Image 1 (cartoon, rainbow, N blue to C red):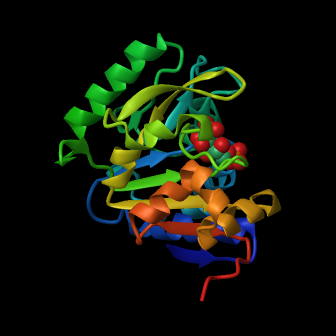
Image 2 (cartoon, rainbow, N blue to C red):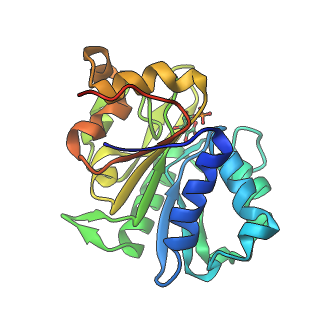
Length: 236
Ligand code: 6PG
């Protein structure tokens, strides 16, 4: 794992903004899958601010979602809704560059529609759609995308998007393991003290981390990156 450590959450967001959105989108089209939850909001507000907005080649960016809650886009739970409010309303991205998961649709048919969509819009690697960048969050129970500890089989599910269920029952549509595995770059964006213990366990590859879906990719590829504000003890 490649760890990028910064002093605080804002500096962490600035590092991702510079690396992925400014530098990464400079020349060629960049197909990025973004996560939801609360962590990305700071990054989105940052790159939507006038100072950063002008430095980004928005015409090269295509946005996709790692996961979506099965709610309408106007619902406070919607990952698209959060992104629209903090980012999309403020930047020159056209509708043809924003590929949202339609959380208001029937979950099974939407997972199929979105799977077919990414399969036909992205290059394929070993038959799987290949994102340039996948930005993942990490939940307090070690989940990533909407792959929760009770559904570890989704780490090996070859259909790119499937229906998943949050432990409290909410249905979601989520990107599965093998498609995350073939992305050109995969990074975790995880900040705040509440993530410290879980990040430390993942970095140490400790026995309990084997139950964390987020730890799975650190075993699969050594080039997975972590952008964090948490100081971690690195194994010798
Ligand atoms: C979601 C996500 C999810 C998220 C983690 C971390 O829809 O909730 O995409 O995988 O990245 O739960 O969430 P926080 O950023 O809120 O801690």
